[in-house]
Amino acid sequence: MRIAIAAGRLEQPIWNWLKSQGLVNGSRHGRALVYTPRPGWEIAVVRGRDIPGLLRRGVVDVGILGRDVVEESPYELWMGPSLGFGQCRLMLALPNDMEAMPGGRFRVATRYPRITRAWAEREGLLVDIVEMTGSVEVAPRLGIADAVVDVVETGETLRANGLKPVATVLDSYAGLVTRPQEQALAERLTAAEEEMGRAACEA
Ligand code: PRP
Image (tube, rainbow, N blue to C red; front, top):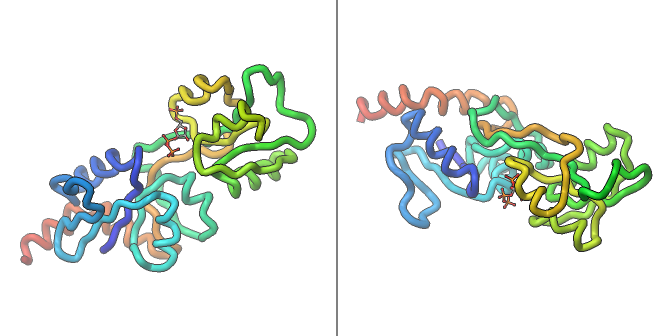
């Protein structure tokens, strides 16, 4: 079983969850990116955005990452329910001094072009996507976009950059992800404690 977990702000809560499942005892060592809790089990820490492709290619069996990243990927994947952490929202935010949503076409800076485009279409909004890889909250100030769509957790980043959230684009959370029809692999993870115990007895 090879599991890929998202690096960054989800990593610690994911380790906590893996511990609660009895899947890991300690932590990975220093900057090592692969942890082997038992023979035949590997946990690799990778960028969340790389996990859908790794699943698709069959390089890993299960991913643990945010729904925002899964929905943004071009692949069809199965995602389980929330594991109880990583809750956040993708939101459209406007500069504080902008009264209402622009009536005509407007520019939206985001790291989530697919999600944003699909949402705007559903909402009947005309948007030009300004694709960025991070720091999107700076875009209106730089004059390269009128609005942003990005992850909002506490709202602090929006506030600090003179932006206000006006619409929810996607509710996100961390969950188990597999190729379609391979949910049974996710069940192996949620039953990991039992399985690991059995493996230890058989060893
Ligand atoms: C996200 C997002 C915002 C910030 C929002 O970035 O891009 O910048 O968090 O959080 P807040 O509402 O609590 O201020 P993150 O720190 O996850 O880094 P990333 O851009 O590398 O994903």
